Length: 459
Image 1: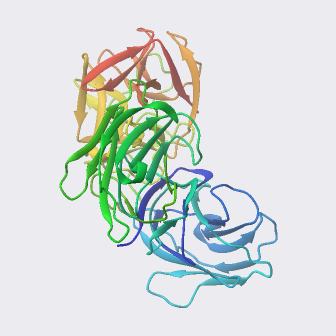
Image 2: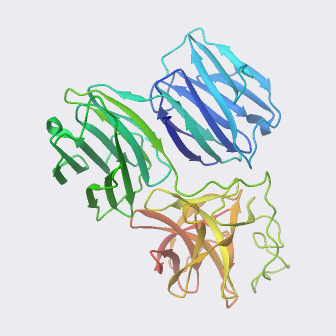
Image 3: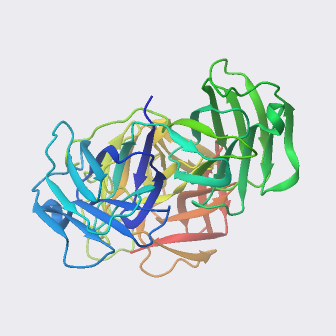
């Protein structure tokens, strides 16, 4: 069983790291340009570091760079090697100081370089930038191994679930955090602890434990045992993956967004892991370029000079375009607005409802978008996604919408609506700002909720 992680990267040159235990990594990536891979000794951007840029400079060439120094140590032309509408497969290898990258199915690399001062690679990082966001499927094809050491090895999460297998005598430890480090807030799940007699859920490394259950003989040093950890809206559940039985469950009254998981063993135990991290919902492949949205309504009253930037029929506002989508589709370059309490990313959308064009949120795993209206959360299988737009959020309150705020739609009465977001029950949720009401409305848990303090999207 391969170790597979599904990762979404923003148009933001910030690596997400996960551990590797062999001299190669295979992956598929869907991005318009600039798929960046980093090889490091630890889960952070620190030297020594080797970076492989695939499809950089407008998807025209690929390079290898060491320690962020120029000139590049290797460079080659790779016109149109990436595609924003489909996954392309690649591999990266490091062996005896030789760094190479190639296409899936091809044994000869398209770029390689011999490092005169090689270092041990313990982590691979991925990111996108320069106008591109990306979706990744990463596989290193071997098991993770953890020593008898109370030190977590971290990887990024892409949804509210973690499926894994563990082989070891006892003390299988899993952490869920908001960063690739042992920082609070933090959930810890200890399976087969205390000489394989009991299991616990711990919060912020504090005692007493939130849950303690007897689990004699749960672990086996000669057999992989399968587990599933799920977290959603503060409910943390640990299941036996074979039977489906709930081993432990706890509800956090103040949940936080989980962005990383960590694994470790200790107290005389060494462990072997098989980790399959997945996002819920099926992948939907889009054509290389999505059409711009057709005009759906006239500009709101009070906007001079005809169509307004950001509205259908007008030019892009701040570089953004509204793109038609449906069924959970996330077009390349979609603007990330926040994340659900499960950790799933939420994207900025708008949709028609009862004569209005309402900003809201896209939850891809649900196969639909949601908009707030009439006191309820309204599910919309067809919607428009903000693509290539800004991600500049400014805190404000009441009716104090900053001049020049990004326009997102209009109410059924013709009032302009803006794009806002709020933090609520462990989520960062996007919705509509209605200035005359002095609040930002979001859809959450089937309801329309209003908040006087919020962030508004600016160009």
